[in-house]
Image 1 (cartoon, rainbow, N blue to C red):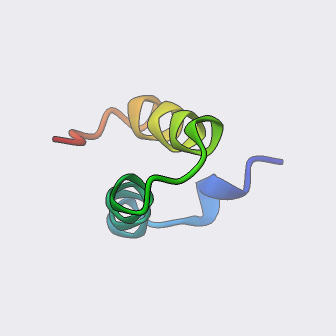
Image 2: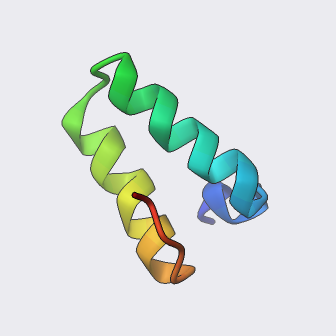
Length: 44
């Protein structure tokens, strides 16, 4: 099960921005980006 599906769009966006700022693992960032794209959200 993809646990990111449980996050609201807002929390997903916040998690992505914080992960970028903290320079977290690229695989983790890619996982977040994939979910953002799946939801057709703007991550600018």
